[in-house]
Length: 214
Image (cartoon, rainbow, N blue to C red; front, side, top):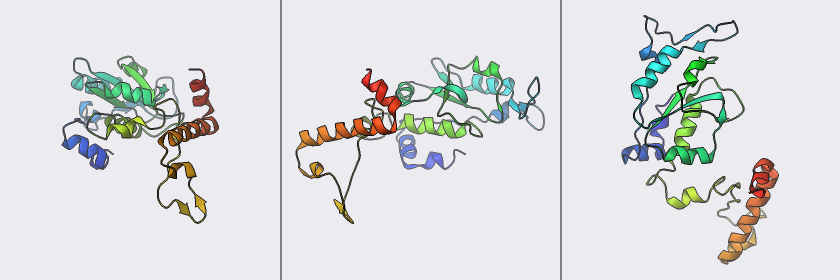
């Protein structure tokens, strides 16, 4: 699941420049028996299979380093945000534990430093959320993108980003706002701030309320 992801331009650039190192650890390698089962039926009954704590925690122990931070990706975690991405980007060693099947043995969570979800929905496994986290963190690392590219984005100032336009200025009668053609940087900045407020208020009232309340 990570093969093509590691070849994506931004990720590949970060890897080639040694800005980041990525190691994929297969939990199955830490499961015994000829079938290397990493899951089992849940105690108390119920649908689905639960990942066993033994293989997962042995895998975690094998990659732990002094100062490392282990995060579990599971729907029961706290919401992953741009603020979290910045926090992760400052870490020396981030470990992402991917859940699967019906979930993880709860004892695994007791050994993690944080528990996160990328949204209020359920996926088949934690691999996709892990890639979301990796992408959002790596692009913040110095040398991966131009600094300005990550400073003027949605969520960075507590608001969604202002609308963006490019050529042509008139597409089948749909014109871009005239202020963007004025060359007046102060007016353009004021327009963009006003539009960021409007869009956030309309599309994400929860964000707008937090912004208004400071």
